[in-house]
Amino acid sequence: MKQHEMYELVFSGEALADNWAQIDLTAEFTCGDTVKTVKGFYDGEGRYIVRFLPETAGEWHWKVTGAVNTEGTEICEAAENAHGLVKAVDTHFEYEDGTLFVPFGTTVYALAHQEDALVEQTLASLKAAPFNKVRMCVFPKHYDYNHNEPPCYAFEKNAAGGWDVNRPCIAFWHRFEKILKRIAEMDIQIDLILFHPYDRWEFSELAQRDNLIYLDYLLRRLAAWPNIWWSLANEYDLNMKKTLADWEEIEEYVAQNDPFHHLLSNHNCMCFWDSTRPNISHASLQTKGLSEIPRWIREYQKPVIIDECCYEGNLPHFWGSISGQEMVRRFWRCYASGAYCTHGETFLSDDEILWWARGGVLKGESPKRIAFLRQIMESLPGPLSPKVGGFLDLARSNDPVNMELVPQEMRGFFKAFSDSIHRMSVEDRTAHLGGEHAWESHCGEEAYLTYFDLQCYGEQTVNLPKDKVYQAELIDVWNMTREVIVKHISGETKLTLPGRDNLALLITRIK
Image (cartoon, rainbow, N blue to C red):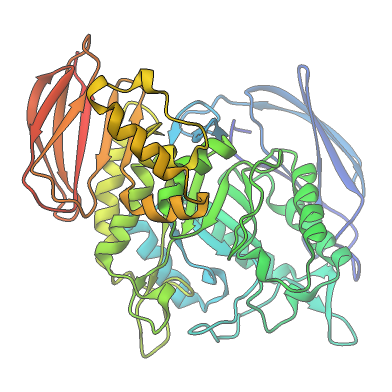
């Protein structure tokens, strides 16, 4: 047994012919004052398995009861390279050992439902790509450019031809787990999508009782995997067979039946899931309204991931036809606002193999620029937080400007600005000033990041702490260059810039 790595107990017993989804098999693991209870599962051909994820090193005693009755003791070795589960800490992510995790995601929804050769090609592409998180589905997907039949399904059929959730298809789960294991070996987190509405097989139409049986079996098998996140759905609000109450019950069921408390989110098409709910670890959003990121971070007090901001490609759909340059811009807008972003790629292909749905090979211009951004983000001294203040925050507030905080020579302007703003509706204020948003964030007083986006500044004045010393670095986000333009600056400093777009400014403390 090794700390932060899945530990498995395998037993032989009676071969079951029916109803093996919710067998009576429970294990209690004890180490000092820590007690964890987990459920085991049936794995076919008389195999009974219990999986456990030891979060601390030491001597663990285990006792299995139900279909198997036995006990034993195992020494858990301290982790050397494993960091544990990724957790949400304030508005960023860390591994259990405190190591910072900065997610850079991609989307391959139906990866696990392709033929073996395509899966292999996709895994090879992932290994060479800059992504450390992948969004993928348990159930197959039916949508444009995604019409293939999967090799196998999560359940067996019953006599009437419907899905029998009490008889999980062992061949499916074996194949599925082999793919998950290959991804885990690349040190990639799996944002596992448990439901979605794009379906011709009626998985999205299961009765709620069957949904919970499916989730119970899935959690028995996968909850001890250290690199999995739970995404309740892709576009939960488009599933017409589930009510809001159904989704709330599903959320509660997953949270309460996961003994290791993996990250948990729910992804929208239109209406955001309420990410202030206690079970939800972070916000997983589909939106192009990126200027609102600082507000969402403040409201949720949790990490925000823009898991869908459109895809690089050339489809005849608005969501799958942005340029590589625009995809890179959207990544920078997110990270320079203290949030995170997920990539996707949708280029037309005669074989209808599009990365976002089925995988294959990456063809776009954004991945290597995303790799460049990842290097920068992982070199920072800590997580970024959005800058407080600015015109957009002022526009959202119904409070008058505190003129005592405004320089004397600017008070007339700010009084007129405030009066004008407060004659507008909040909706009009946000719409009017959203395009004026500044993409700025900071890591305490250790680092400051500003993304200039489409602005072509020839100069900018920065205001830094006077008792610390910094250097300023100009970053070309498309050409992937970094240049220190000035060293040893403090306080109010005017910087000369080249007057072109797609630049960022990184100011880091050196003394």
